[in-house]
Image (cartoon, rainbow, N blue to C red; front, side, top):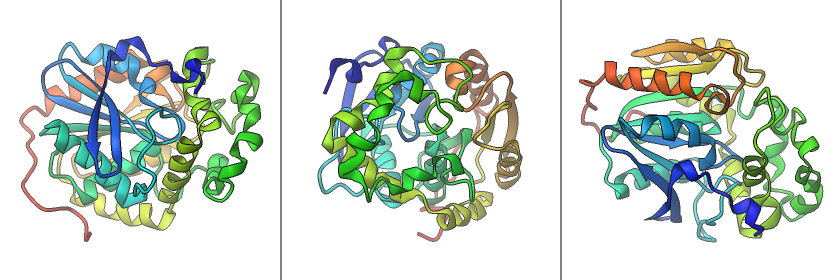
Length: 304
């Protein structure tokens, strides 16, 4: 893989690895205090949380997972289960293996949908949930990214069909990064998102499997179960989002019985890129205000 595709934000520090059933998963771990676990979406990686990590590690232990979602360096095992249930187990098992308890789980984009799956299937170590702008019910994936569902069928053609994504101008189209931020991202960040799947067959194999999570019926069923997640939740939604509707933030705040809704002004989907101080402050104050919250012991929320 080209060196520029392997760039990792210096704010995250040195990478560590944890062994789970799907293989070895890279993660970044810093700070001390109540643990926060960050879950990114498809075709971004741990770099998306770099500005939040730097702001929260003075008060919290921050663990940023680098998941096999298409912009990763460390491929999963060839036979890895990266279905919905497989990805839920991957994240929950990583939390267990790292030795975390009473976790604040933070998700964005597709990672936010996966966090909804996780808290309704394996919530044992989750004390709080934070959802930034993300998929919800039928917006899975958002219509403008519906082509992603085809990746599992055209995997060998990806280097040819998606070769234009090597160009920064193409990346600013709405079907790529164009609607996710108002301004261009740094070149090294963009490259770390866009190049791994173009350069590495094993990365393409992993992300083709992961696209099976895009099941509107399953996400609707999961949304119906969120009422049973009786732990504190924060919906931190980008006010200017062009991909994830504001109405979905309001609906999630209604679905989750102990949720509060906060808007992040002057930001599109990637609020952690555009308004990191605001998002970090919201997460900090939310954890501080709910410091006495503890998970109730139970096997699971949903019927699985």
